[in-house]
Length: 262
Image 1 (cartoon, one colour):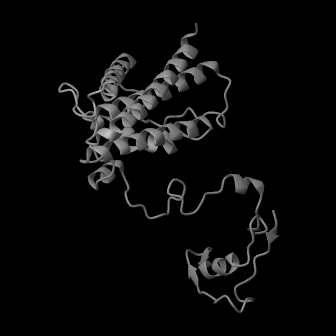
Image 2: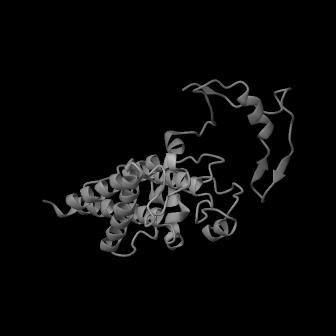
Image 3: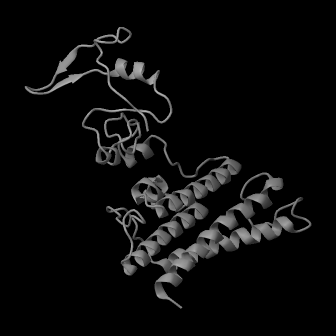
């Protein structure tokens, strides 16, 4: 990585000199925005501007400016989960349009699965799986059976993974971060979680069978509620939801097998 020395603002005629801002008896803050803007025009990919006291430790412990998860000085839109919910974040239902509601449910499922995979790579639960408001306020999803059962199962899976890894006592934090920091990881028993998931899977399976029946394109069986209003998309949405639920269901059983053995 190439390095470039920092030039003084006064020595560069293209960079306007800015006044210092006094802060305390021995500290002086200076606005370097114009300096950074000018330097950014000259930097190439892989180059870095740093001071004489820069070292590898500083690079490893540095924060990324303007990253909401790292930069505590950034102005956030919401400052608490409750404030975000009050302002319309993570609504339940996800949409009053049934088709959009199913689409957003699938999006959340995929996002949570991606977050779990990122957690397995060494990131923390707070920055991955539990960055989802639906998991932080799981009781709010009780009226949405599919989303509620999926969120409860992914929470139970995370708990099972932590239990398995902690029992082995052979992992490092960079392998898997097991600290929960008081997150709502422990809820109702796993038996209730699985019974709810089985009921949702059975309902979706019945709907899928109805879609494949010869008369499914003409009418929907009276005792089966449609996922959404477009019959041409119903079969695909049923398959998409079932695949995601069954994949997570299988992952959870794998973790239980690892914990309790053969």
